[in-house]
Length: 468
Ligand SMILES: [Zn+2]
Image (cartoon, rainbow, N blue to C red; front, side, top):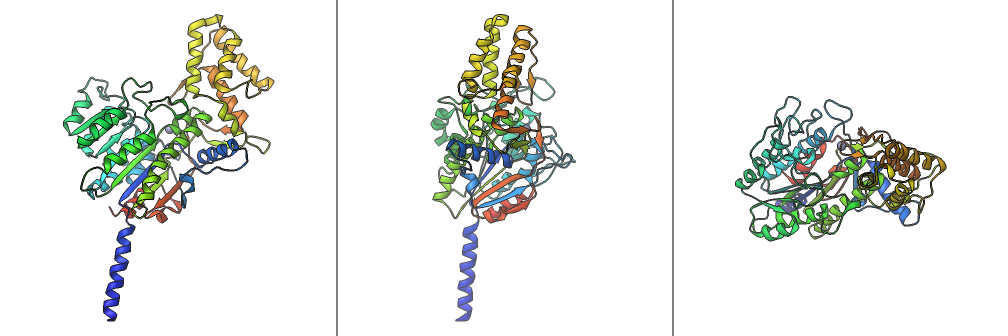
C-alpha cells in the first residue's frame, strides 16, 4: 500500500513537473530598453493621467523581475550584435559578431534548440529581418553589416516564420558586388513571402513556412516599420506581427508548441537620436505586442512563458536634470518623430531657401513640437532655435546631426534637445551605455528569471524552462 502511495506521488510530482514546462515561449527584446526607458514611459503615462507616479506597463507588471548585465566579450559597452548573440546563444562575443564566438565558431541559438526539440520557431522584429538582433537567432556571420550573407542564412536555419520591415541588401553581397536576389532563394527553400498583412492573410493557410515583410511602397520600407509616433492607418505594426506569428505557429495539426522572438528594434533608434517622445511611444508599442502575447498566455497559463528583456541601454538616459522634478507630460506635445520634424524643415528649405522666414520655421516647430502654443520657451531656448535658423537658413550653413540611424536638420536637433530640457531628461551619449537591463517574466518557468543574472543566462534559462 505504502509503495503504491509513493508511486502515485511520484506520478503526480512528475506530472506537475511536466505541466510546468513552457510549451509556448515568447522572448521579447526591447533593443536599447534600459530600466530608465521603462521607468520614463511609466511615469510619462502617470503624468498624462494627472499625477506623479507610474502607470504600469503590462510587461513591467509581470510577477517576476530581475536584471541582467549587458557587456560583451570585448567591450564594456556592447553593440546590438554581441548583445543579441548573448541573448540568443548564451555566449558573450565581440562587438559586431552575429551568432559566432570570439574565434568565429558557430554558436547555436536557443531558437535552434527549440526547433530541434520539435517546436515551431518564429523570429520577428520592427526593423529589417537581417538586422543584428533577429540575425543573432538564425545567422552566423563575422560582421553584422553582412546583410546579404545574413539573409542567405535565413532559409538555412529553416525556422517557420520570419517577419520584419524588409531586407536591407537583397541583391548586394558584402563585397559590394551584385548577387542573385535573396527572394527566389528563400522561396525555393520552401518559404512563402507575404508583403503586408492582406497578403499574409491570403497566403498563410497554405504556406508551409512564411516570411512576412512590409509592402514595397510603405514609406519606411525596407529598414523599419514606421515609428509608433508616426504611424498611419494601414502601416504594419509589431502587435500585428506578433498576432500573425501566433496564428501561423499554432495553425494546423501537430502543434508541439512554439518559440517566438519579438524585437522592438526602434527604442534603440529613438534613443540614438535622443528623441524622448519617440522613445516612450516605442516602449508602449512593444508593450502592445506583449499584450498580444499576454492574451495568449491567459488562454494557456500553465504552458506559456513570456520573457522581456533588452540587449543594452541606449542614450545613457537620465531622469532628472534639476529642481527635483520631471515634466514628462511635455513629450505629449511632440506630434511626430524628430525625423518627421527634420523632413518638414528640409521641405521648407527646398520650398523657400533663404527666403524662408523665422515665422515659417516657428510655425513648423509649433505644429510638430507644441513650442509657444502648448509649451512656453525660455528666452535662451528661443535664442538657440533662432540662432540655428539664422545659421542654417540665412547663412546656408547646414550641418546635419548624424547619429547611427538618422541624419537630423540642425534646427530639428536643437528643438529635440530643448524638448528633453523641458522634460528634464538627460542623455549622456548618442550610443549605448553599460547599464544593467531589466528582465520581466510571467508563466511557466518564470521564477528562473528573478534576481541578478548575466545576459548569457537568459537563453539558458529559457531552454531549461521549455525543456529544450
Ligand atoms: Zn543601438
